[in-house]
Length: 358
Image 1 (cartoon, rainbow, N blue to C red):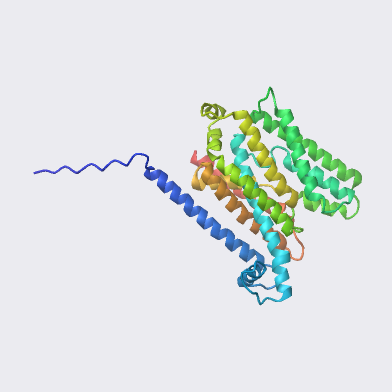
Image 2: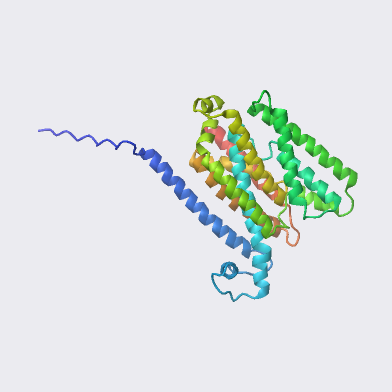
């Protein structure tokens, strides 16, 4: 007598497929891991430096200032943690998160794998504003405002050049951004050549190469507010970004107003990039490299890519800035130099793996 194996019961209607469940679980696991890595990075980075600090000292100081506990730290050690190192580390984390998220969105909207937050001339525009302020001697008080204004002005000029009959095509946008970037770079060089004297050269060069040496709690607050608010809006538009990844025709078929949506999302990217550049200067490779690394791990869905890119970018920037301030102590490197040294080889490896995979 033979028996026939019973067929498996069909999955209930509307239930997610096993592959989808596995993908969601894997993404959740990666986000949890990177959140732990970020918390550990903040703690350890604050302890690294000429003053000998323990990780518990960091949390004692935080708990004391937040009213959660009473700290036994000396005033000097508490000042090192709360006034010097922690604001800088948190600012670095916010800048890294902002640049990584912007890079992921830019690469989708322009359908250009080499796109980064500075593709639309944002960094060069911010540099013009910052250098003008430094040359005029207003000091660091007006620097964030000037850099932010320069980035937004560059974006408006890019949009004006790229706009044709009310449409904003990706190729024209990229080319317009490059033109604006070169124009702003020329303007920056002219201002430096014509007006910079004495020690202002060093201050300007430090900003142009990226520096977090002057980071404060105000800077950290500015960028973190931008990351949380703009990042939440971008994550809420994850399905729209997924549609853009398949091209304008697919997005239009799905009922998306392609031109208006692209304008809106690029404006959000400009706001987030401007906030980051205003406090850190021009830092490259973060928005270019990290989104590709994240996609290798969790795929291309933006509901997974954007949160993980933010966490990865934050941890990466913390350690890049830690290397910048400790590698040649007491001298400090611009953090943009460190990200370039780390980012260029890593991006070459990613490109190599992508070519081999194809």
